[in-house]
Length: 196
Image (cartoon, rainbow, N blue to C red; front, top):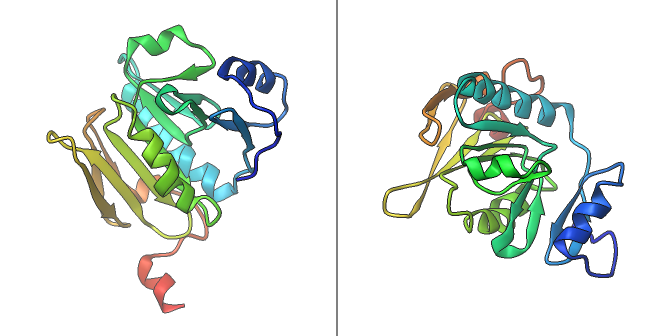
């Protein structure tokens, strides 16, 4: 991730500057970083997950967002663009350009962002006191890493593959892995990948 500019932004400067841009940029501690475009697989997987969450939450106080909604993590002076997030906190109704209190965040992994999403971003996301579920979804193989915050305050990791069903306790939703990847072309099973 390379900074776009050299001088330091305040959070308000960043919001005002980015509103005038024709591309998305994330923000961390005064620096601004360009967001790369997404592949069709990336977009379709995010869209499938968003569609399930959005339909499930219809008529409920929670709201699902996809890709273009910023997440502010004020504890680390950052703004990110999660691929999918859900917030159930009424305080998020007060801000139109970003949200701050998600219960669920999902990131679709690519070769260039996987380590960043798995380490740096997750470290930042763990500062969000409302967050309960974090998903890392491969776009190349049928694999979803689910991190869930348990009652002891520990993040528990479970990996799901094609025939599995996983439960998002934060929004009381069961999702089949096969549905997350529905109609996405070019995704392999783990066995197929390791046979190559």
